[in-house]
Every structure is written in structure tokens, then in C-alpha cells.
Image 1 (tube, rainbow, N blue to C red):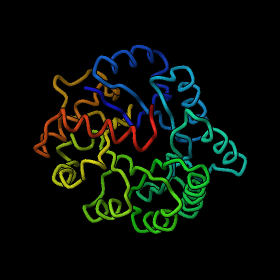
Image 2 (cartoon, one colour; image 1 turned 45 degrees about the horizontal axis):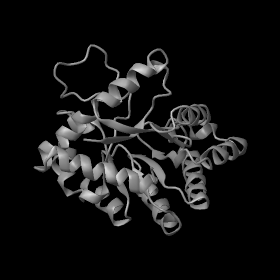
Image 3 (cartoon, helix red, strand yellow; image 1 turned 30 degrees about the vertical axis):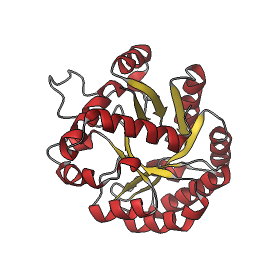
Image 4 (cartoon, rainbow, N blue to C red; image 1 turned 135 degrees about the vertical axis):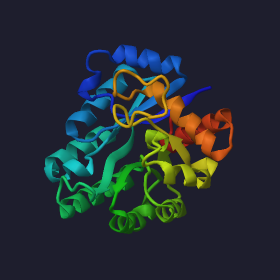
Length: 262
């Protein structure tokens, strides 16, 4: 069984002391490829460098997360364009809107998101998208640019069934994380995951965040890792009535298709 983790933040400082061990553990768990998430200029550069160091195992994205949209400058955006143009970089983002925390003002989030959508259209690479409590504005811009885009994934999907269906109507892929393993806040996602078409489903850890709460025994560390991706897979199988093997095959093929992985 081969898996692709489409979103892991392995440039995070929590992995600085044991990255080789993390990679080895992920491989042992069946994770065949990892896409490293760029969330600002520094992490996008670092993710790309890791992709060059481990070209068979890592790809990456390049972009500014909505939390840091206020720090995006024209110079930054030009550098993101240069990084995103590299073959090892398979998507533009993480980009989108987050009105839950509003770490950046709404207007600056909107401007940053639109710049990333235009960049993805220019480069003809998929978008790696983030949306929280911002569906209406997010969807308006997505629809505006969708005819120019080659595709994309709504990463770490946690929204309503209505939002889910609207993204599927735009032929977006849907990324499922350990959120679905959370009995407290993941129950609605558990109920709707079966409605995601098998050709649109992707899985991810968002490591080091969103450690699956269903892991037994519970890890001593709260740091999530790609090696725990099978737990996301198992939980999806539980709530869809499908086999682990079939979901693994579908999500592997979907990731290769969307991100043009070798």
C-alpha cells in the first residue's frame, strides 16, 4: 500500500532535530511521497530546498498563508513566483482566507489570495487552498479564477456540506486531515466524507498539527507526523464503508494526477 501525504509542514522547527528519522518512519508506514507546505517566503524556500535534497520523496508548494497575508510585499510575491516556477514545486499556496482568527486584515487576505490565484493561472499549476469561516468571499474569487486554473485542493476541509458541494462543483479536490479523527469537532466531517467522490479525495497530516485523537496508544508527543497518515485513512474507511486498500489506491492516484507527480 502506497500513500501520498499532500500536506506536511516539515520545515517547522519541531522537525529540525530528527527529520531523517521522521522520513524513515513515514516510509515504514507506507507513505510513498510527501508534499511540503510553503506558508511564507522562508518556509517556501526551505521546502523547495528539501525537495531538491530528497527529490524522489518530497515535492513542495510555495505561497503565503492567509495568517501572514499582511506581510506579503511585491518583492515577496516575485520571489514566490520564482520558487513556484521550479519543477520540484507542484502547487501555489498555501493560500486562501481565514476569517476565524483574522491574523491579517480581511482586505489584505483578499488581495493576497487573488495574487496567488493569478500566479497559479500564469504558471498553470494547481492551488493549495485554505478556507476557514470565509466561504462566501473565498468561493467568489475561486469561481472568478476557476476557468484559468488547472485545478486545486481545498486543504484540511472542515466546513459544511453546502461548502463541500460548492467546491466539488468547481472540480476541486478535497483534503482530509486528522480533523476527521476528532470525536469532538470532527463529527460533521465524519458524516459527510462519504459524499466526496472517490476521484476527488486526498489525504494529509498537516504535520505537526492535527495529531489524530484516535491513535492508540496515544503518542507521548503531541507532534503529528506523516507516519500517522494511515490513521486518517483508517478513519475515512470506517465512515465510508470502503476498504482501506481502495481508498489508499484512489488517493494515491488522485495526488499523482493533480500534482503531476512522477
